Amino acid sequence: MTRPRPEDRIERRAAISGIGQSQVGRRLYRSDLDLTVEAALAAIEDAGLTRDDIDGISTYPGMGIGTPGFSGPGTPEVQDALRLRVGWHDGGGEGPAQIRAVIAACLAVGAGLARHVLVYRTVTESTAQGSGGRQGIGGGGGGGGVPRFSGFLQWYLPFGAVSAVNWIALVAQRRMHEFGLTRRQLGQIAVNARRNAALNDRAVYRDPMTLDDYLAARMISTPLCLLDCDAPCDGSTAVIVSRAEHASDAPHPLCHVNAVGTALRGRPSWDQFDDMTSMAARDAASSMWERTELTPADVEVAQLYDGFSILTMVWLEALGFCGRGESGAFVEDGTAIARDGALPLNTAGGQLSGGRLHGFGLLHEACLQLRGEAGERQVPGRNGSHPEVAVVANGGGPIAGSLLLTRGPG
Amino acid sequence: MTASGPSLRLLPRVDDENRFFWTGGADGRLRFQRCAVCAHFVHPPAPRCPFCLADGLRPEPVSGRALVESFTVNHQQWIPGSDPYIVAWVSIVEQPDVRLTTNLVGVEPDDLRVGMEVVVEFEQQDDVYLPLFRPTSAPS
Ligand SMILES: [Zn+2]
Image (cartoon, protein in one colour):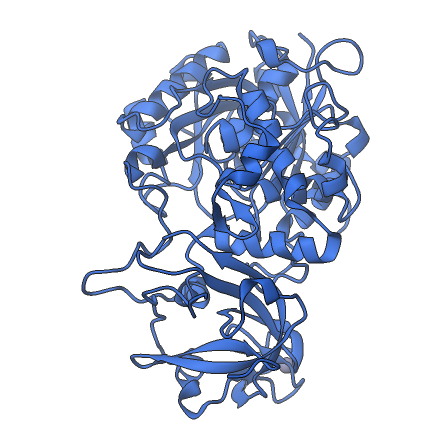
């Protein structure tokens, strides 16, 4: 856990020079490649580049992983669709959560392997699920020839713990035991997201929602109800990670990468991790702060993973915005995390109401806020302009990664 | 009344590394690998002791007693026809950092508590004996 020498923090050579997002919605019935190309072309144009400038490509998790609609196209498909000639390419489902694809791109441009990397994350889970709703891992069973399971899934699936919501509900219940977390506190994460989604015309759920609506929603896996779970959707988000010195004439302000959070010091396991209330967010966050002079008090807007509401609470503590076990009290009346609060949170509606763009929707919104381009939902910065420092966190359980971004001049 | 688990159990693929765990319940005993050098229990099964890196881990029965570390009542119909069932983390009394994800049986959701003392029992499914846990104070 040594602090890196300043010259070793090569992520600082990287900046997000362009952002793009495809159509986002429920059951779009468009292919993952089609959505990805739409997002990629938007990001390339936003960066003031052409595809001939793109010499790197990266994604999470890469082709053919997980339940239908989860993985999006692999980098070979996207590289070929755009006829990119790349000096560096990478995709994978392991590492510091979904944002690993951005972190890898930062390291690649820092090391001189590429100048402008197209990084994307695409989901078509809504179309894949059709009208059938979300599935557990391993499918619903039934019929002949039910497969058997090896690897880590063998320890969970036989007991009907077939979805991440079951695994994460155990974290939530443990926090109720250790810290006195309540459902009313959890509900504030969902209500805050819905309030912000009302100002995001790409969000999938925009109708008003009260805390009473939340408390009345049907249970999925106690204490988590339907409104604690993010909303499967279709959509693609792309960003261009550039070597900053090659993006000095970008049309929008650069979002400089100040520090990345990548550590995993506990056991990489949902049920064997040493601290059942924090897990990998603790390690990723602490490793991020070890790489920067900035502190939690400098952060002006936070986009924290909300695949399930409880994960946002975990990140609030892990990143030091409140003490261990204090996130419930921190969010309790909703004011601290509101757009005009001390720490505006998930300002585009997160994944709970904005749609499950799997970490990258949060990244896209962080960049919009830093650039001052978030329109009606733009939050004020502390110096009278828009925010200068944003944090993005992805993942839950034993999977976590984070990114600290600062706005450049322009 | 909650069910003991989902209506259909997705089962582990039994192999040379995990057979002692998944079939050991045939005689009613829960087993974990244990290191002959440093005496740690190891879970999931490993090729050598991850604590001291010694070779020669061997399966060894434990008491079957455990503590509930957390729990959730699943209501979602991931597996059609399932009544609500309890998923829990339990830690074995011999070594608290060895945990299992399991089902709790013989207890109603309102009576669930972190820290409850539970004891193993096995549910046979084909060649597999699934370790489930029941409160020690409840009548069986
Ligand atoms: Zn040993």
